[in-house]
Length: 117
DNA sequence: TGTGTGACGGGCG
DNA sequence: TCGCCCGCCACAC
Image (cartoon, rainbow, N blue to C red; front, side):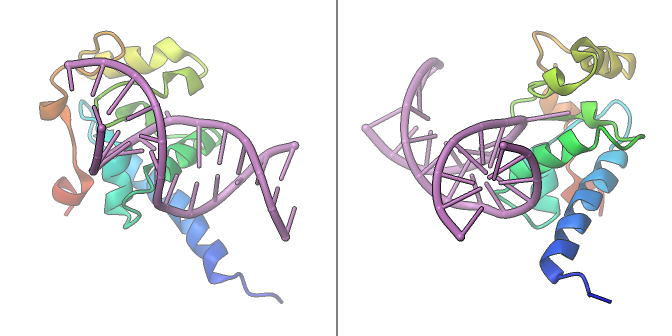
């Protein structure tokens, strides 16, 4: 039986790791793609995190709406079934959103590298 | 097999 | 301050 290549194995783990980290984001908090990428040791590859989040649609229990870009902007809302649902979900958890942007992002920011020791 | 694309981030003029 | 360009790497065609 063929053994999976290290590269393929790592790719799978990367996606899984992204989901795992996103699931650990506390309610009422948000994080950025770059922070997740840095935590996974893929610093500079924040795009891969976004790619993984697109695939996260197939999974359930992935609060992808808690992930925004470094400016606290809901750039990925268009990828949800209900683009407006992303903002509504955040506001329901106490995260104020104005103009597709998280209010007081600096305080709401949750850094896995620091909080998730 | 090669090329284009993207839910990003940092740097430069 | 604003806008543009480059690097990053997995995936689709």
